[in-house]
Length: 485
Image (spheres, helix red, strand yellow):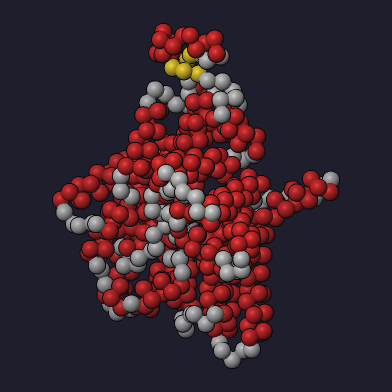
């Protein structure tokens, strides 16, 4: 069940909303909580019910182990062993479903064997709920968790707005909200806020992201060769598609959660305005960055063991972040690129170098844009195809309308014609890209709008128009990109 589907918007969400608050009104708070868990698991099972036992077993295992880790009666070495077992079990489950075929393919290539691939379907949300529960185990080991019953824990893990693709939430910020009795009563301001930000997210997804998706898909997956402008249209289209798609999902998740008086953490803060790679990761997928920092970078030693070790920890953290996103060498390279970039940025700062803000932004944005090429490409050949075009190695084609004035350029190999044909674009495509970039760079993001939100005729009209446009444009339902990760 997709957020951008009629069944979710007009059936699942309103039914869940009204039944949940009806049960709370009757003071059946535990029943309402159980209903929310049931609804969330129904939401999860909509894609493939075969994986419902998987998430249930995972939740039960981690809950029981977390309770044991939270007990102070165990000796430290026993608790540490329990934690290691828990982390390995979670990673093994993730590794089996997500990386088994990747491992087998590489073994076959290196050893010239012919092991059969498993062809396992990736269980929805496994990357997200695995990280979420590993964080819970680590915090239980540290004595930072409170005593919760299984129903509370199940709501924390399975709460449908954030279950499928985040934000990656922390038990300390979620469980108290579900326990707060004030959150059991309808809050009309939160309902208004929720509908407002949900409408923005819906518009981002079905109007913006899905429009850019057409040009990105044609360029990456269909075209055999891209000229200069086609390659840039392809890369920028995916850069905008990914942002509007994932931030749109996050907006819809935050909006849906607010209907239940639950505040999810911010996950995006105008990342393409970043003026350094460090700044980018403070703005992009913020909850993933937080997880990597708290549960990978700092445990590795952070910046406490000298500069060389700090560089190593930075690189390792983002290499693992790349691997987490997908089973493929393109993801490994993407993670390595960002790890190296963070090392270079830190060294630059350590030497006391400075750069003009505009130049810093320009370099950062183009590095990110090039990095997304590897992130998106299914194979290295697809990435090389796009990068060769972006560098001008496959020629430059200009619009026919310029041929009379710039015909002298033909002696330098420039051609005239449909300059973005391979992307499936038309004469309006450049304006679409400019419009998307103007939104990204020139307007406030949804979280800024949310912070300054006031119920007024203006905001009602704004969110209403976005919602109606989104609803009327849901003729081609498409999944969110991060469902693949």
